[in-house]
Length: 266
Length: 275
Image 1: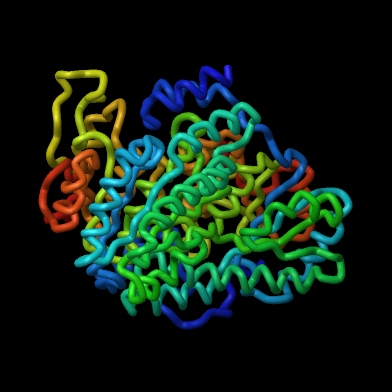
Image 2: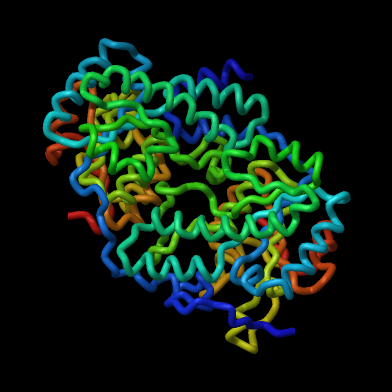
């Protein structure tokens, strides 16, 4: 098997569908099957301050001995400001991505300080080799949600804002490590037919498939479109849940596998 | 429960969902500043040249030396045969795509050091992946060119592939994305074929050659094999600054120089903004 695959890889074009088919026969190992990735929103959550952040931090602490949590952070209003200034100053998407990363990093460090007394580390992209140890020893680790694409951030289809932001960066950690779940903590219950902050008639959607979501082509969605697209190609991460973290207990329920927000499957 | 908060800084994206298509389009037409508009990027295939030894590599290096007398170059290379072997062992051991992407960067770095060693007399060195980004303009003021390990730093953040488990963003993709960000003048992908054919020309003598093709046409044709990363079709479509790349045959090293000089000597792949 391995000899045959080596032969095919060396002889065939790396884009040859028959070779790609061969590589898909080998299922990747789930590296951290008992861990959860939790993404805590920037604009929707951290920017609101202690009123919403402290109760959530308490809930994270309560779960430290029960669950392994890889916690990523969003960017939020300062990233919007940076994108706004950056676009006007002629910055390319790759530079805008860097500016967003800095904000997501600030949020990660603040959560890290709030959890410092519990021994929870903040890890940089280069520090992920230590992740399994921290999860085993302390139950959690915090990272910034932006994928570290730096100057290699691809252009979006429309406009200039980096298309792969913190939702995507967190999702990809759950996909690569094969974690048990991917939970997005926001200030809304999940997905609605329109932005519920602007449209009172927007209807809540408790469960939907990625395919249906793409077919609906909504003007506004609750997670980055890239996540939905990637889910359809995923080897591990075929389900995500969006929850309202402002309701005490929702995070714990989601960690326990309960359905408390919108579940998107592929 | 209150559903809005007002802790914002005033800006044009303030309070808006960045996922709203109308908001995303803001700034679409604002011109992007080009950081390095006189610099060219040349990607040298590792399987096609470095792995095959000095007979085919040295003539390319000699040609790069000549070009470096007049032009600033960013030279990138890939992992070649060792990355392919790594993919085989890695997949057999159950490594996910992101881990393969992370580890393949090391093979590319090894090859970058080979080219960097050969180009040292010109002051061209292999720079570490973490320095290539923001330090690039500085390096290019100090030297006529740099070599870097072409794998983009997607690492464990590599996207799941549409088919199979091989990382989709490899060195060709890395070159084109970098060209877009820095506003490079041209992208040349040096391969061991003349360019794009409708079938693999090494196996089909009647294969039809394309000297120029748009990404939209290319997408429709859905060719079985390509002499570059398939993900480039999606990338080039959205590019605004780097609107084309040229695939040339490095077995005739003079074609590299011609391509850098803007001549049409291989296959030009372009988007709708090209021209």
